[in-house]
Length: 216
Image (cartoon, rainbow, N blue to C red):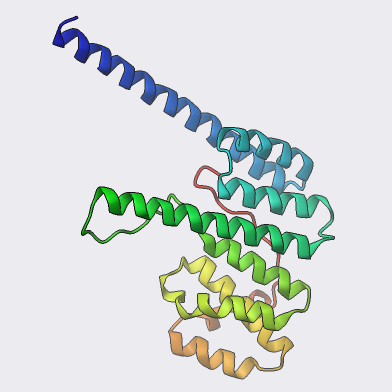
């Protein structure tokens, strides 16, 4: 086989690999959308079945594990909040380890450069927020506040929707602890436009949310 044949063979193999990757992405995207649809319709068992299929294709993906924990929690009638917190803590720790490993790989390949992990990696903010929401429902306001406070300190860097959810939950905690004035002063100081929202928005019922998985 001459060099031209070798190059041609490599090109065919690369094209085949790209085609396989695209096919897998299409399947996982479809499964993710199906799982989300089931979750939003309250069909939690069906949602879990689809997430199990996703886990087989994306084994130990923190996003899949996170959403499976949320779906199982709702399927069980939200009856074991402490278990949910422990599962979410494990998922968060796993995602931190994966993020650190990915950063180390990039640094090894590009020494001397500033490394930032791609947004394709698991966003731990939603998991952290869900842990805080769970503690809030259990009336552990101090635990919920201690989790939210570091997020609030960096709130300008967060997506606006997540930032507002953090602010609203902090406000509910402050109201429960009769300390709303100090919280509102802090919000105004950050420059967030929380006060433009109606009282109905501010006193919304908190629900634990699944993570958007890009394709999910």
